[in-house]
Image (cartoon, rainbow, N blue to C red; front, side):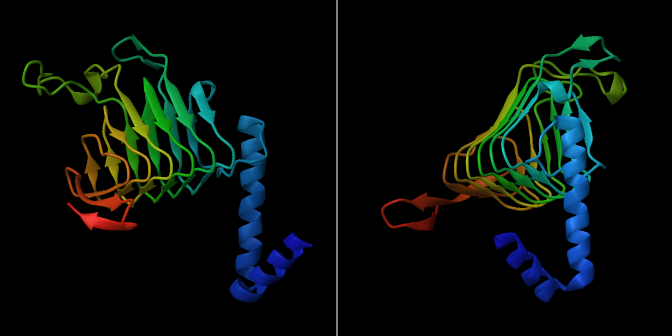
Amino acid sequence: MHRLLLFKTRIKTQGVLKTIDFYYCRIIQLIFSTIIFKRFDLRIFPDARLGGVHYMRIGEGFGAGRGLWLEAVTDYAVTGQVFSPELIIGDRVNVGEYVHIGCNHRIIIGNDVLMGSKIYITDHNHGVYREDFSDSPDVPPISRHLTENESVEIGNRCWIGEFVTILPGVTIGEGCIIGSHSTVTRDIPSNSIAVGSPARVVKKWDEEKKKWLRV
């Protein structure tokens, strides 16, 4: 009865054609997720690029827009490197279109995380660019070793805006908001709003006053 009511409401508010398109998308997502993950609770479009599925743990109710790219990198043939990645996604995580998550060590995304579109999250780079050790620009980027043993962790209930980039070695605490077009290069404490490139905290949640306060 509840589903029938939702169906009628969708037709009334969005029209017949959009309603048909909605249910068509849900059906092809269901078929694809069942074939790849043997599960009925995931919503992933067939155009998704999925590498290293056996190294992924995806929680209940995961949903993604078109163009998803989940990559658990097990080896890099150019340099002969071998990895044991862990890509862990919690329950009720929803991401927009063209989100790319690349992992060769460990990426953990908590429960109830919401992401916009065109987001890039990675725990590795092509080459090292520190002052104490740097890969030469004379070496083509594709031939440089992938960096290893760094993690990315995103806490529960975070909201990641459009076009955000999250780089290796970053921990984002619970309840955070990362503004659109931001580049996260360092840890963000829980219950913070961070914006910019590199991202910096501009507001924090005050538990006593129950409001976001500027810092």
